[in-house]
Image 1 (spheres, helix red, strand yellow):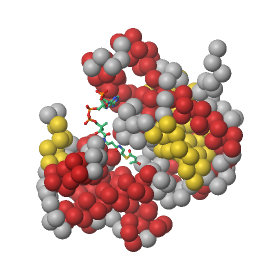
Image 2 (image 1 turned 120 degrees about the vertical axis):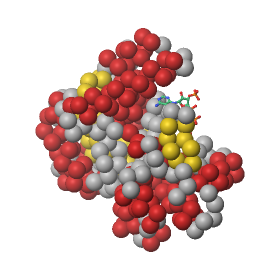
Image 3 (image 1 turned 180 degrees about the vertical axis):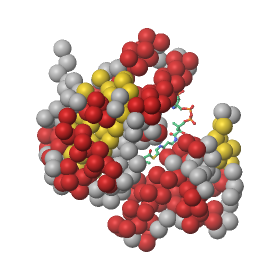
Amino acid sequence: MSDREEHVVAVLGAGTMGHGIAQVCARAGFETRLADVDVPAAAAGRAKLEQSLARLVEKKKLSADDASATLARVRAVDADAACAGATIVIEAAPEKMELKVDLLRRASKGADPRALFASNTSSLSITELGQRLGAPERTLGTHFFNPPPVMELLELVRGVGTSDESIERALAFAAALGKTPIVIRDFPGFATSRLGVCIGAEAIRMLEQGVGKVADIDRAMELGYRHPMGPLKLSDLVGLDVRLAILEHLHRELGEVFRPPVLLRQMVRAGRLGKKSGHGFYRWTDAGPEPSDV
Ligand code: CAA
């Protein structure tokens, strides 16, 4: 018999990342509860998860039985029901500290007394989150990558107060999910976002300066550096609002090099958020992404 810790997982936020994280947890065999601002929003996330599983069945990457068993482990509920007795709470809400503190504070009321409080934040301070939650030793970052079912890395972020025991439990959780973890010290932007947004922001500035068209700038990194997708397409995949929030935070914390490009602000103001809104630097249709120069 396996001695792995049998988690009950609450995922708070059923958007781009949240439903993918829930898919990974349920696929690993854990009971998974998915919540959002209300139950219909959580149910919409679960429906996307169902579609994602159906695509895997279609491609013969997953049996129909495994897909149904995975789906059966996921319940779309309200946040209180999601957190009741949960042993790990993963918040995947927008990049706003107040919102994350609020969500995890509420979660801590009903969760298991030993529960880990994990944030999927791309850049915000885990140390501050743990301190304000009143459980610094059990608070950490579990930073997943989009699309969560595909991407191998799990960046674990250790706050100043995070205990060794919590990191050990998180490492075991990562292994159960089939992810390869790295443990990173809490510092704005961690190891991944800090580097990732630099390339993305520079690509947007190059577009502003007329260095090349969307397709050419992306092709430069796809063919010249073997990146699986260029920086503008990747920004669309992540969400331009998410990228802007990360850059604004890193600009405040680390300085000028992270100043958000004006064009990025304009696109977010125009509602061109990337793949999730159907239009960013590309138009996203069923036929695939088409460059859309600005
Ligand atoms: N669930 C399960 N599997 C999925 C999936 C999903 N939701 N989406 C795609 N896949 C699988 C496909 O089944 C396919 O599997 P095979 O190779 O075994 O056939 C594989 O992923 C590739 O998918 P596609 O063939 O449809 O597309 P692709 O080859 O163009 O790859 C991609 C798509 C995986 C997204 C690839 O382009 C890629 O790796 N891009 C870079 C992604 C990246 O850098 N992500 C990190 C963003 S930063 C972030 O997320 C953190 C942050 O803080 C903002």
